[in-house]
Image (cartoon, rainbow, N blue to C red):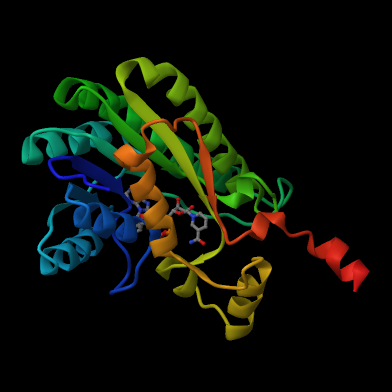
Length: 263
Ligand SMILES: NC(=O)c1ccc[n+]([C@@H]2O[C@H](COP(=O)([O-])OP(=O)(O)OC[C@H]3O[C@@H](n4cnc5c(N)ncnc54)[C@H](O)[C@@H]3O)[C@@H](O)[C@H]2O)c1
């Protein structure tokens, strides 16, 4: 997994308190592999906490506050990574927000907001990161964070559509930028227990239901997603591009309605 000398940018790399979200886990694991990491979050204090955790282990990281729904801020974010660390090799497009309900229940405002945060942010970040990777590192690797909701819809329609677009964007960028020596992959997490989930309040019963939804009957964490991101950004994944790696303990394989009829 040696990433010494590489520079990584992770969006949404903060997390509440000492909790480990998908972005924070990726930041810590990339730093452990030797990369210098620009930890970006809209909330600077959350990114600073991630940097402190990395520094405590002897890793190299810097915190920055940018809103990835704004093109000018994405441009400045990429410029900051290059000016701080001299190059840009790796990008984890991790920012995303949820939604609830069907198209009938959804408001126009929330539809546009979710698409902007979950899809436009990745378009805007890549628009500026890819030329910087080509110029400063002669190529690189990108991971976009989708969700199993894109593969198995379950009543979160706007979120599902946005995360489906993330997979399509990944495949299109993989085709466009293979010639630039840039690999583009996707991670689709199942229900992992991150601060975003437990800060909304989750009962032990709900937590147990999520656990039992996987064929392994275990709970996923931010670390599981972080390990997948780090692998796809490493040289070990040099022959992998345009792929969606599902990290869900087998949750998408289950068909609960059929199983309940059988028992
Ligand atoms: N937690 C899950 O169960 C789960 C499941 C599937 C997919 N995912 C995806 O994983 C990713 C991260 O999830 P998480 O649970 O770690 O989330 P999280 O909410 O804990 O972390 C995301 C971070 O992004 C930051 N952020 C939000 N909007 C931003 C913006 N416009 N600009 C910059 N920063 C912004 C937040 O401040 C937060 O610190 C998301 O894309 C999410 O959709 C999560």
